[in-house]
Image: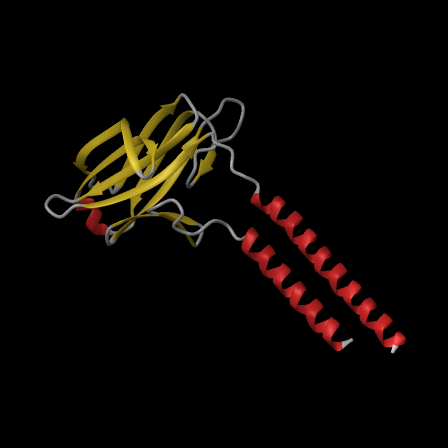
Length: 194
């Protein structure tokens, strides 16, 4: 009986680990230079950081704020604010290009030429007409340039891994419990025959 309990506890532990791994949000740097830190979306450009926030204004609904992927097509405002003071004195260039796949950048969608932003705020407004995958490029500096490259999508639904992971865990756990139960019954039957 102790063997069954140990095996059951191991199966439950594995199932809980799978659930935890499946429900944890994507990797912090899954979008290249973008990460979440203390509820603030940060964009890393070499040794520097900027706060990144996107907004979409839709008629009849409140502003929809986002940090990484853009939830819908339409007029989009992206605001980048320098966290590091040094960025206020460096020329900053912002580009959004089509994602050509395989880590390659496609044609330019919009570009803000290199310019110094003394206030530290870089606003960008664009009307995304079609869903798709894009890459944002932010370049900082004159002589020594730092580039942040972050892929993002517009109006592309995210896969629901959490739901499918839960189903997989339930199936895995049920299978393990049935296997251990059948094994225990077989041992009990052998013990009665002996």
